[in-house]
Every structure is written in C-alpha cells, then in structure tokens.
Length: 281
Image (cartoon, rainbow, N blue to C red; front, side, top):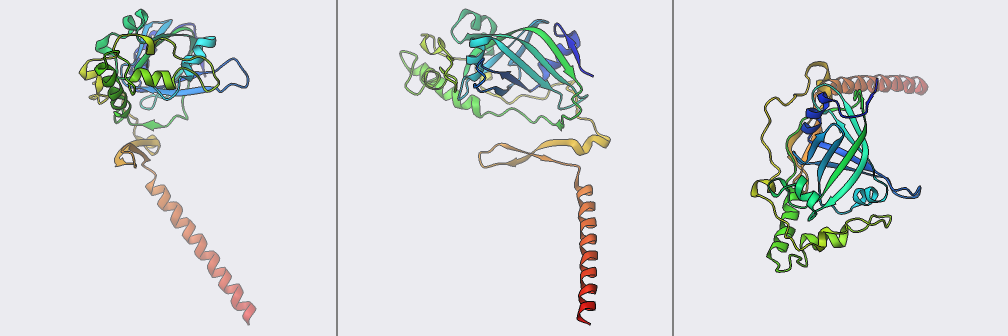
C-alpha cells in the first residue's frame, strides 16, 4: 500500500541520494501545453538539504521545458525507482525555484569544485508531500556507469567561452543557452540570466568525468526466482558507442517454448497429411 508523508523520512534520505537516475515531471498551466518528463543523472547531482528541501544540479539540454514550467507555476514532481535491492517507488512533490548559473544562490549550492560541465542551474524544491509505493513492477537493472558524452560535449562549449575575451564565444555554452534554452516548446520563457553574465563557466578537472568507482555497501540485485527479471548492460555497443541493455535468465523458458511450438506444428502437419491422403483415396 502507498504511504504519504509531509516531509522526507530519515530512512529515505540516504536512499534518495544513492540513486543513479531520477525523473522530473513538470507541466504548463495551459491545457493545450506539453507535459514534460526528463531523466536526470550523474552521481552527486541530487542533494537533500533538509526533510522539506532538496535540490539538484541541472545540466544543459537541448530544451528548457522544466525551467520554463517552474518559472510559470512552480509545480514539480521528482520520481525515484529502486532498480536493485528491495522494490520501491518514491515521489517527491513540491514547488520549484530556478537559480541560474552566475547567481549567488547557484554559487552557494553548487561551488566550482562540485560543478559539472554544462551545469546551467540549481533547481531547488520545497517539498510539501512525499509518497512511496511498492514498485513491484519495476525491473532489476545493474548500474554500469554514467555516460560521458554530455559532459564532454559541453566541456568543449565551456572551453570556447573560457578562451573568449568576453566569455561569450560564438559556439560557446552561453551562445547555446541563448539559442536553445530561452523558450519552451510552448513559448514560455526559459533561461534568462546565465548567458548574460560576464563570468566564465568552469569546474575542477575531476568533475569533467562521469565515470565513478563502485561504492562500498551499495545494494545488489536479488538472485533466485527473480533473476529472470534482471537486465544488465553488456559490453556491446550500438552505432554511437552507447551500452546496449539486454535481458538474461530466460533462455531455458524460451527453449521450452520453442520445443512445444515445434511439436504442435509437427502434429498439425501430420494431421494435414492424413486428411490429404484420405481425400486422395
């Protein structure tokens, strides 16, 4: 059964901060507007300040739906899933605030030693409700690592701004924000300040890498009868070099299904031949 809380219970705080990915949902006020849901990741980007206040480091993307929706109405929901260990879904309901790169609030929440390449804002959520549900239908997935592509891509943009005397290169990060992040797809205002500040975007070298070592004490996927649900990232690659997800543990069942299907097909073929012979006689 689902349970609701007015703040984040102590037993959930560590679990929330350990999750490698979570989802953010926002929507405009207009009934014709587009509801948005976005996955967020990179270890350490989500933080719990206190049981009624959380924030995360928002990395640059091709759009700014969530920023625009928060600016219009403040509504936001975060969703976390347990992909290993005991099943669980947790939703964090609240009202969001956007603090763009270059603002004092951003600098306080995300100092340079914690800033990632492409970091554009600190999203702060004042929590008014937390809900947990069973999560029984969520599959097991084994975490293999964060992708490096986004950090590499925007690190190049930031370096162009760093090399520019005005900290605003033609193909730099600020130019990207100005071109892609100032409006939502419904035309709502998005980013408004970060691309105008004189400060150059920068971070420590270790923050440029997404690869992280395994953490001691991390929960592990259950074995036994649930092993058929475990999905692991193999060493295979797709056309752009990303890890390919495959499911394991179903080989015996599939083999049995194939044998049964073959036997049924053979029986039908024999019956058909018998009928054909009788008709011929």
